Length: 165
Image: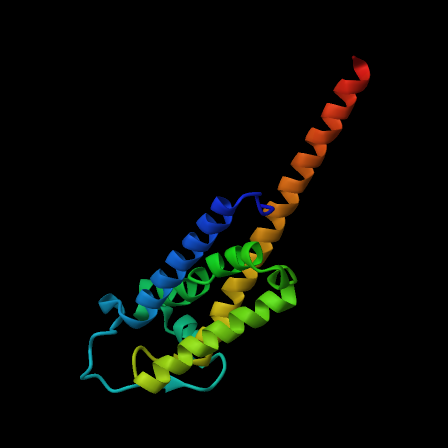
């Protein structure tokens, strides 16, 4: 997962990240299946940490798959952010920086939702999104570490082959 040489690789990575951000913004602000187009509904927000998470867990039987989609979806949608940002920005290769950047992005999204009354502001979403970014970073770290070990073992193999000749 180390940055490849050449400008096309950097361009491709940025293009993928930009496409992901576009999809994220569409999902958060415009996706009709999540009630974004319903302007007649009463606007709701949650400022109490873990209120909605516990509500979804407590009322799982009544809410069914919707609770799983909401909780897991808020985590899953930020996993790519946690994987892509360290590739594109060196400071995000430190876990605490990445968690902070994920928190900021989620806070900005939730604040825009509150300001424009699109979706709903929920502090639990900020927590779940940040958790998703952290999971993405852990995946990035594990994949990067695995790639480094593989390239190190390949270099060792070449050295050993060179000695036997």
